[in-house]
Image (cartoon, rainbow over all chains, first blue to last red; front, top):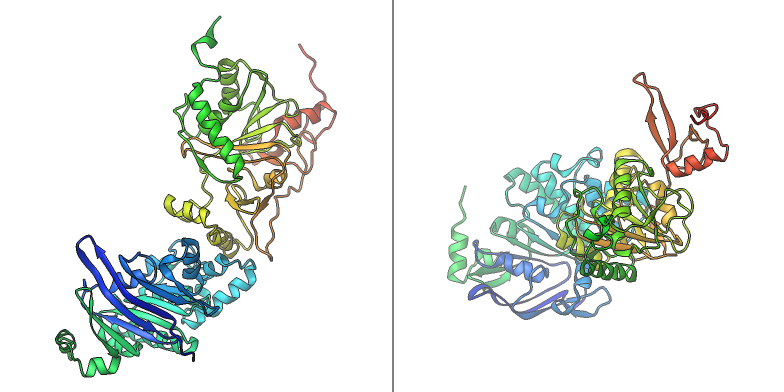
Length: 258
Length: 293
């Protein structure tokens, strides 16, 4: 493993007029590391994620990403063409609602193949073989390859979205509530799958969630946000077992015990 | 007899023609790029060629010879009306002969007779955006063109092969112009796509409702998109034209009766008539031409 981070974020702030989206967030993300961002709704998690994935421009602060050639590039100074290229090759973005991240009117195979075609793959047979391979890795049967995602259940759609994002072998994946809206047994299988993929592929990921159990299962490190600020960060187990900030203590003690 | 005096030459006012010519020049300078223009109301409904008519009106001069075809035919309502329109408002000579025309306005065909340098082919375009049915947002499609992100276009072709085993798109088949912009060649059959490649004639495209003009200058590369293992191919017909026995031309199916009788004839009526005049006979051609009464 290298001793240089993949992503360096420093003093990132986003204001919506006088309202705070996220304020003065700094952290480093290392290759292969999963960072969970937790907090209640409205705490700025998604704003932070959107800024990092360059879907939003921050009001101030910087984020630099180590490209495949080892050079750090300032994300907000790249041209839009470079940013979009990065987003469809080296990055992935898993939306909470799969309909936002999938093309609902084209088949599952084309959904997975789109990124390959976008980077210049022009061999139908190879694209299809890769799609079949990825569908099996996310536990979707091969005979569903020509079905539209509309015909898929929520859990299958989410798995398809993951396959679509991982097909170009990204190094960094952003996930916004990847298990939101799924029932618990489907959630469990999805988490299991995600955990397997992340370890197998050595992915770095930033996972936004309000579900502390998801954070505990997936992540090694955790940031707790409130009102746009990071109130506590550290190793996931440490934060959850020994919360220091009063807000984190409240959050951890609010988990329903079954 | 001053019918024409009530109109400006070629119907449009000079300012409008100037604006459209600027759009055309920009389109020629950036082959395949869709130039927005302030499309005018024309005395015909959208979908009947308002874009093509505006382009023709802006480039036509008193010495031009105009031909108008609709699906290859010179004698259909749309073609006849537009020809009559320009005869009236521009007082120009009109013809059905492809070789002598200087401007050919077309709806969905390229004539079979090869075009030559100096001719202008004006297409009527209903939907200029090739990515439209894949990405409904105009802001997004313009960005995709700007950044040359055309992966989505291949998604459509992929879907075709997945569903039908081959690329089943037969008209409005997407092309890449001069290695840069992906362009909708208007709903011409893909049979005509190879004719656009390095054509000596200037090709102009007008979409009136969508307010876009684009162009392919003479001798420009126009390449149909495909996959390495599913290359582009045009339609083939297993029989020649029933009237003039032409092969390797685009044929229309014509229903003859309500018992399933049908024949295939040239879609390009001018081409078919010329061949018959030269003595070519298909299997359904009348035995002898009836003597003039």
